Image (spheres, rainbow, N blue to C red):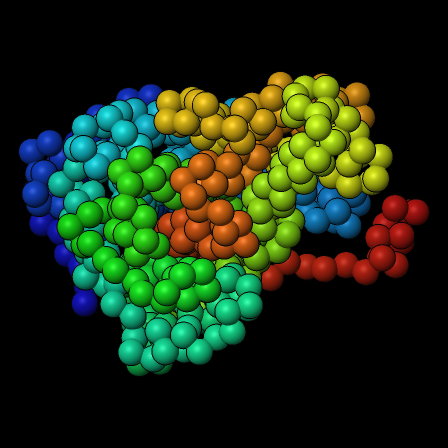
Length: 471
């Protein structure tokens, strides 16, 4: 199963690197139909392994941070102790995917129309970028689409299992069950049992990673159709990943397809410290296969402090509207300010505002706002969200207990979905889960390719901390 790339292809790849410093030359203009995803990665692995070994040998004892007592007992916030290839989150600048900001990704990644910048990027093109650090050609993105479609069929026992689950079981619980049930097809687990050499783990992990991403849409759509509709899932594999997913959900609107491409792309990755990405990485470090590793990530995503936050935002906005409409008052800056202070004085948070790392408006919020201005400028809920955006930062600054008074990604995503009639907000986190697999599992590939070890931090007792600080 060892993947080989010709010397000619390797040479061309070396001569046409993708730069993360602003140069956005697509790779391989002369090899547009030659390099597959597997070949591209096979060419990169030896060099990255070499650089990792050199880094450990030459600089392994260098100090890159320190840990305070606050960080130890406060969730390890800001502790620099995790390697993450695929993205970096800057407190002031926001997310970069392999060095590219969201607007830069929108400008250079292939789209459904085939023209970069004409519509939202294909999820497949961002998946390629996160795995390889290279901007794919449209042909390469299309080849990945075809590969994912070919892997999408679920094991025969999975749909009957999903059909048997109670409809009032939370969709995220069902999602985790469905993915874990697919683990029977893990190539990595079988290869490990068969004694495959450690230096080949990444090849088998990649097979599983592609299969997990491919199977998630039908699992997610089956849950959606079972819980909210007639249980029937239809497909159109002539479309890209996002377009076909929309058909499976029951939506046939090109504008909604574009929203789903944007939604899936911007939720893929947010560096490695977030709970779902970290859980995937942690479980994967035990050499659990990608199916089980990402099932762990989904369980983390299901928490109200993580992926459930977007539904909390929509609930808050709906409560705001209902309150003032029942009182015969308009929803405007004055009434929003009143409702916000009522929320804060009740010792509650304003959902959708603040972030553990960011100290500015989340670029993922901004690109969704731009989508709304283009596609739905007169939508009633969007106008409410836009007014909240105008007044909330000053309210939170005056309140004084929020490190970041600006909106995050969750502040906007639910309103966009609601506009298209996707009103089942308990399900929104499942959409997040379909997307986040791409980032967490792209890193999991490099975890195995670089031979990263079992993650096992040292814990300390409160008594130990006291003994240290009192010395």
